[in-house]
Image 1 (cartoon, helix red, strand yellow):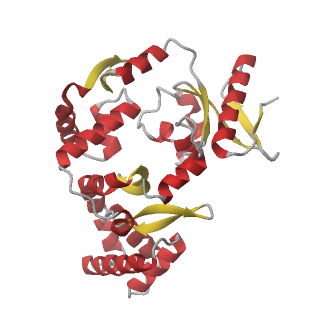
Image 2 (cartoon, rainbow, N blue to C red):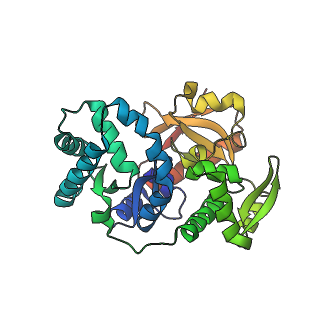
Length: 324
């Protein structure tokens, strides 16, 4: 996660990004679809309030199956909140202990996991600072403080613009999937943006991009040689889209997510095209590149340049190994 963020910023390192979490500028929470996302601290609560209803509703059946009542959930949330406010940042193991103490029914591991997920999806907890390379869990309000209430519709429109800026061209369906919200809600937010976004024609039909210099720079870059990047596993470039065919031919998808098991491998990207995967090699400081097809000498050099960027970001020496 730190690598994914730092590689997108000029002169940033993983240590720089870690400090952004330590000083409460960034947090990692579960605001959309019940999955982890990094976002600005001030955006976590307002976004969670907009998006959590669907996810919490989908959890009701699992709670019944585990024989957890609404009253028990409320008791656990209150007790764990008090613990976190008192203790400050905790490890996941410490959080599990707190939940276990708060639930008086002799909780199973599954029950504890469900209750932690409930705390997460509701926005009660989030990931905050790092300690010894591990990101700790905090009580959201205690960690970032109470923020002024935002108008929900205006806030969602701003978040939609950011999504379009970072992912465009995108469709309404892409945005609905990303936020975990109904299409009607997304379309209403898009309407509020007015001419801040514009329509572009794609092979998938009309889609949206932001208006102005950002889009002009992207379109101009299409005529230049695309940069090569070594992106880590579970990177946003792969996770951010339901349809990944624009980046990866279908016959190679299994190389990135073997057997569709949800474990996304690190990728070698040339512009918007994934051209292979990479992994740590047995030799210390080496990465093994597995291209989807033969690579030219110039592409090998471009991959080595990309490896130097990984060195800059991580502070670790990186050498590249290619197949024989």
